[in-house]
Length: 170
Length: 192
Image (cartoon, rainbow over all chains, first blue to last red; front, side, top):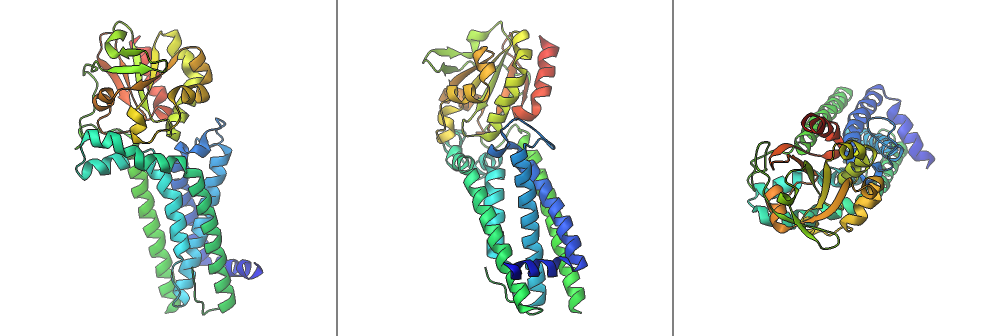
C-alpha cells in the first residue's frame, strides 16, 4: 500500500505529469458530469451544481480523478520502460462510460438504423441493448471503481518498486 | 532525449483526450437532439397532424389520440428503465400545476413493450417519480400500442414528446423532457 503511494507521489512530483493529471482530470470530469446527468445516480432531486445530485457529483469527481491518475501513471510507466498501458484502466473507462453514453441516448437506435434495421425491428430490439445497460448501470459503475483502484494500485506499486525501470502488469 | 520523448508522449495523450472529449460532447449533443428523417423512419414534425393511433390506460381502457380533439395534450413517450425519463417525471412533479392550470393533460406513454426490455409498469413508474402530478391527474400513465410507437417514434428514441393542439396538429416536439421542460412550458403558455 505504501509502495503504491510512493509511486503516485513520484509521478505527481514530476511537473509535466502533475500538469497532465490536472488537465486530464478536468476534461474527463466534463464528460462524466454530462453523462451522469441522466444517470440513476442523479435522481435524488437535490441538484448541487451542473445539474448533479451529491451522489452523481461525487461519482463524477471520483471517476475523473481516478481515471486521470490511471492514465498518467500508465504514461509514466510506458515512457520509462517496456511497460504497457493498464488493461484494467481501459476496462474501467469502458464499463463506466458505455452504460452512461449508450443506455438512454439515440446512439444505439441510430446505429441499428445505420446497419439497415427497419423501424419495426428497432422498436422491438433497441431495448434489449439499452435496457440492461440502464438497469445494471450502478453495478457497472461499481466495477469501474474497483478496476480503477486495482489499476492505480498495481501500476503505482510497480513504479515505486522498480525505480526508473518499471514493468507494469495489469 | 528520453525526457523530450516523455514530454511529447504526455502532450499527445492530453491532445488525444481533448479530442475524445470534444467528440463525446458532440455525440452527446447530437444524441440529445432528436433528428428527423433517419434511415429507420421519419419523425413527426411541427405542423404535421398527430396520427390517430390507439393507446391503453393501466386499467385496460382503450383510448386514441382523436378522442382528445378540442383539448391541448402532451404525448410523452418513455421506457420505464430509462433514468432520463425518471428525471423528466421528477421535473414534471415540481411543475405539473403549470400544465394543470392551463388544462393541458400530459399522457405519459410507455413505448411498446418498453422497446423490448420490460421495466416496471408505467403506473408504478409515474406514481413513484411524479407522485403529486399523478395524484392530481395532471400526468396520466398509459401504454402505447405498437402502431402508436411506430407512428410517433419510428427511430426507437427514448424520452421524446409532442405538444398537440386542440385541432390535432403538432405544435411542438423535443427531447428529452428533463432538460427541455422550460421550452415546453413556454410553448404551452404561448398557445393556450
